[in-house]
Length: 118
Image 1: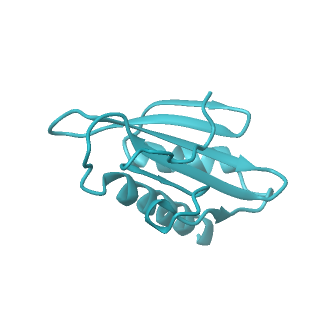
Image 2: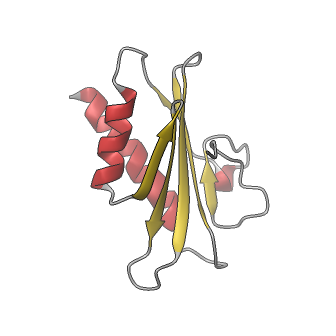
Image 3: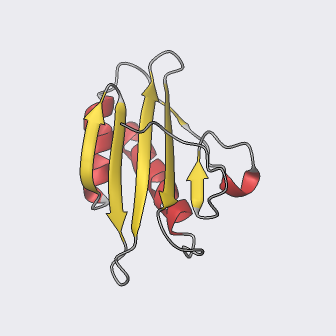
């Protein structure tokens, strides 16, 4: 199972672990009292993620573009000690993704934050 990753040379990647501003998105602080598994899987299903796998506070899934059927991978990991949700998304092919990975992670982050506030 892949954990949250750094972007490396991938131009179509965004991650909470990145220090480079063009590839960085902020992680989410979550208290251990929340049902993180239910929260994450609910949002992924709303986002139409495919091939969702879960093991040891880590999720992996695939997103497929409607028109070209390009596949992007997303990894999510909950750090029990830091009480923090980290995530990353990258394209498996192509040189330009029309900011699909950034938009996806912004939506994921926003949807999680909305559910926390309920």
